[in-house]
Image 1 (cartoon, helix red, strand yellow):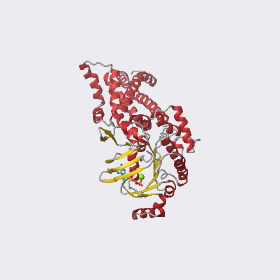
Image 2 (spheres, protein in one colour; image 1 turned 45 degrees about the horizontal axis):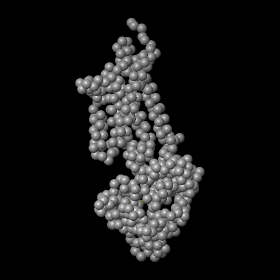
Image 3 (cartoon, rainbow over the protein chains, first blue to last red; image 1 turned 30 degrees about the vertical axis):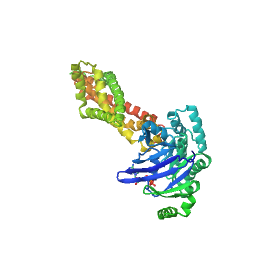
Image 4 (cartoon, rainbow over the protein chains, first blue to last red; image 1 turned 30 degrees about the horizontal axis):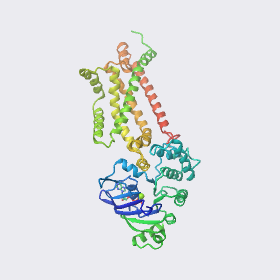
Length: 258
Length: 224
Ligand SMILES: Nc1ncnc2c1ncn2[C@@H]1O[C@H](COP(=O)(O)OP(=O)(O)OP(=O)(O)O)[C@@H](O)[C@H]1O
Ligand SMILES: [Mg+2]
């Protein structure tokens, strides 16, 4: 059972008009694996995460999460498009943190974290609050529970966003360039939280990042994608020190020289 | 020559008519707000028919004169056996009319909420209705307050139309006094000021609503 992938993309294609962004994309992610997805701008990294979060639909292919089809359901042995109830059931296993934080600006940090457990999972308010306090402690924000997003720094907001996503107890967490909108001095505190998650918690992580050092440090596997396909993947040491593909080499050369 | 009636007497007379204007304004504003939310959201429905019906409501009431709409309710409805109090006609007519404009305000404010908010709501597995009620509308409401302030002031001014369906509002009373005393300048100057005070009350109320609803949105204490 533990060999069964927790996330499985099979021949997933996604286009925006004429632009093919995911091109018959295949990817298996093992439970508790930490994958970093790297690649040039426009290569489809965000789209990859967004179709798995069901923010963006797919055109063809299938995605499975923890054994269930995400965008489909099985009816009389056939695959039919998923209905809202099915989507909500499977989507609950996945969580996501965004580049722009996307905190709810009209709620305190604490309420940002308790809102979905209470109103989506139906958790009792006391229990949700207790968990939220724990999570906000974990991300180092015990003194900011009552602050509103506008009163927090970018790094603090992003840590609230991580706590908010974790409060839903996802099996798979996705991070889409979560430090790209931050001032350089705030990047470390967010990476620190992600490092803790990677090392001290059982969690599957799919990370899109431009922080090559960080990707190398916490990933079990690096996927280099370009043109909506995986060009090369493997353990970080091999990808970074001895990439096989000419395109991977060119990309790494360009980003590491900056 | 007849002795001039003092400004204070006009002011008193017009203020006595003000409750009617206020009642119609408030009644129509409440109705307009409810219609705005209902039809503004209907304009964004996923269901084609719901969108179409909302569109028809909006275009119908925006596309014809409010006065003719009032006359229709006042003179034509009785032919169908529906006889409404003039005040009710005023409230319903003006409320439905303003609601058509308000629906566009609601639609615009909802659309203007950052896409990232919908995406975060999806990522947290909120249903569509919960997303709207708990996340989108609370933010959109703040943005709606200034345009709704304008709409309600338009509504207040528009209540003068009810003087043409036998209601003794401020305008009707002013016209009456003018016929009796012929002191147009004094009477209508006072009338303008009474409307102005009511408009200021609306502005003040909407500002405080905006501030209340916007608490935490990073606008508190900022320039308003
Ligand atoms: N909603 C959309 N409508 C049209 N085109 C889109 C949309 N979303 C993404 N695209 C296009 O799809 C391509 C892939 O976008 P995506 O955001 O997945 O790239 P990315 O790898 O995340 O890039 P970056 O590193 O710049 O974030 C880009 O060319 C982008 O312009
Ligand atoms: Mg991206």
